[in-house]
Amino acid sequence: MKNLTRYSLSALIITSLLSATFARSIAHNDRPNKASVIGSTQYDDPYSDFRNAKYSNAGLLSERDEIKLGAQLHREVTKKFNLTDVGLARVDRLGQRCANASLRPTLTYKFHVIQDREINGFSLPGGHVYVTTALIRLANDNELGAVLCHEVGHIVARHSLKTLKKSKEYDDIANSLGDITGVAGSIARDLGVTLGQIVGAGMLTIHSRDEEREADFLGVRAMPAAGFDPQGMITMFQKLERIEQQDSSLLGTLFSDHPDATERIENTRYEIARMKRR
Ligand SMILES: [Zn+2]
Image 1 (spheres, rainbow, N blue to C red):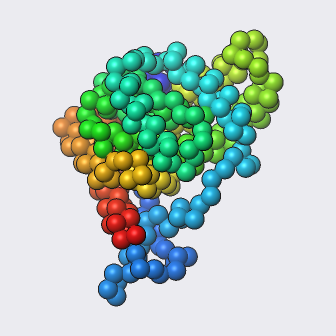
Image 2: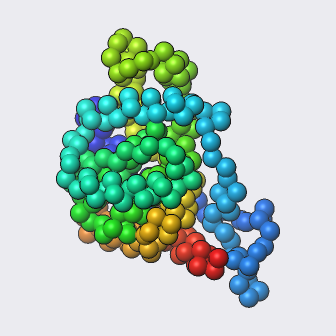
Image 3: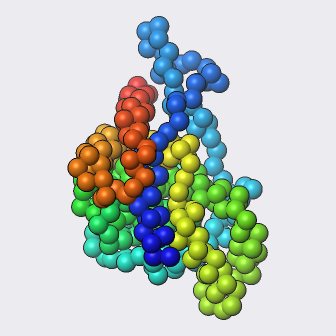
């Protein structure tokens, strides 16, 4: 399990920060507007699928159960990873700014730091966001803000809940959450075993390319209101690209399969230009 856990933590940096995105979707459903038409050239909007998205728990676990699930998952994370107070005050201060500026500001967000030499960040249902000590050392405030706003974006869009809903464990977990009253007791213990396996396999923290693109979009959109320079998202990607070239073991193994930081930088540039025109 330890190896699996390490592997999944390695994988997270890829999915959280650097995973490949599909070719840009053609924005044929979007009416051309001032932002997408420059001169006579219409540029494809990489985020057209997400602009009018509405987010809620409808059809998923209720927010109450999501928060219960998050508490249980966090317990499993604390068993598997070495959490630390190093840098936590900074991460919480910056992270709460992302939370307040997000499209889901009423949820209580909890930010955590994991002691690890790998550069990484991930989030779980119920408002839990994790970054590693290696990441927070690497990133200035605008860059760390970019990562944290991206992770909050996954929580806003309920990506992990949508993944869970598709899993074979979903019914069991949903039923257990309904019965659970605390972290003790046999129901919580049984649920803990299942959730421990889910955390170990990285099931809720590995996202599709579309989900990564959506979290990038929600993240960069939240950054100005959170008081961050959105250029920080670009320089963060650039730093990760450089590290990949120098010592890719710091980023985990999957990064080499998804060398698409260039496209994510392009998409982020597009959105920053678009926000400036508004
Ligand atoms: Zn992500």
